[in-house]
Structure formats: C-alpha cells, structure tokens
Length: 85
Image (cartoon, rainbow, N blue to C red; front, side, top):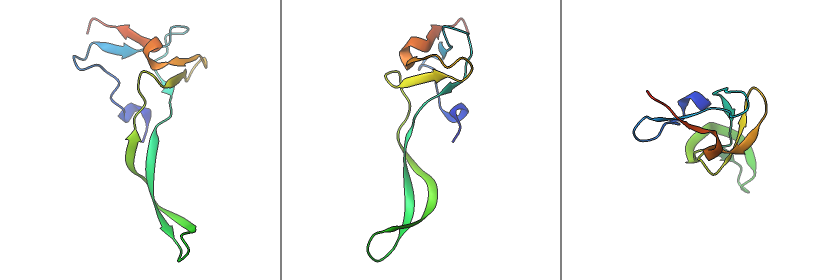
C-alpha cells in the first residue's frame, strides 16, 4: 500500500502535511501490518500468502515522519499546516 492511499487530512479536510524545511508533501512512514503465512507442521515459516491482510497501526501524528525529499524527520504533528482549501 502506498502512502497516497493513507488518509492524511483532518476530519474537516482542512489539515495537510508539508515539510517545514523544504515544503515537500511526501513522507516515509512506518505502518504496522499483519501478513498471512503458510507454515509447516512445526509452525515454521514457509512462505507469505498475503503481503498485507490487515493494517494494525496506521501512521499517526505521534509517529516519526521523514520527508521523502530532504530527509527531515519529526513527529507527524510537526508537519501539519493549516490550509485554506
């Protein structure tokens, strides 16, 4: 799943995220996902059946976000900006 699939706007649609250093609007973030595995008789991993069967934790304002352009990293809330749209 790409970051563009993650909803990053506030409930009212008035919050965007932008890097305070360079203004870029794309970020590297960590999501926690569940995978479906095929295991053997002893429970050992054999292969991945599905790469992402469920997102357990979506990136939020307390997680570290890293600007994909300049590499500036901080909590997501540090990248929030008010917009007029």
